[in-house]
Image 1 (tube, rainbow, N blue to C red):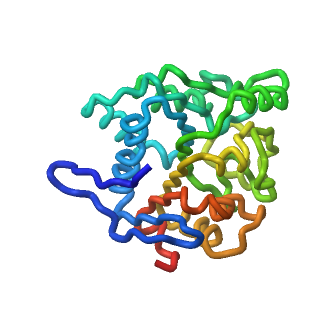
Image 2: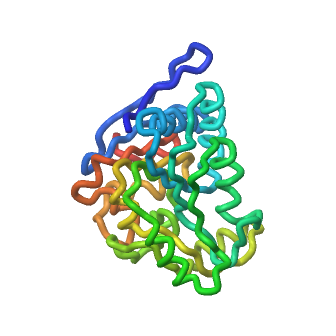
Length: 262
């Protein structure tokens, strides 16, 4: 996936800075959150254009709202077809039904599969009687993705892979950290203690990985990812493993890049 510029109202949006970071990771810094989101959407839409039957793993969360809205707009404007794309689900809360307003399955239906017209969508079942069995079922469906879209959370977590998750982990059930639970409940969400997530091994075997981040808080998360040791203490540091770094693009606004050595 080549990171591309995007022309909006005759104005070219290009990174303020584009450089190779530690271990071959590509870092693109955009002026604002909105421009980063547009740039991300233009990068993502290259997938169905150049490989119509690709497999894409979609993350959720506040970071992805703007890129997915722009992706839907671009899809309609450009007439891009997603009907042969396979969509995979990165993670899901245990106990969240497909129609729960807090479920990632619902988020993806509303912002990705319906607006883009994706038919071949594979969702995790957060209300399965046995989450371990559900994780195994989902793992059996997976093949290496052509693109994984990621955000980043406290402690460098990606998906729901919390610190100390093995780098070779596959789809599994995770007990959420106290920090994650507290953050979610502080937002007014239901208290949930477990989740299903694709493992770090699933993520790093993808052909391309796109991580999007905005804001000063994300800068705090990113600096140890890029400059500290590669260790399960920081799950996202796995993006610097041998053979993985050159597949990774970080799309950041100026605030998220503020503490990086660029």
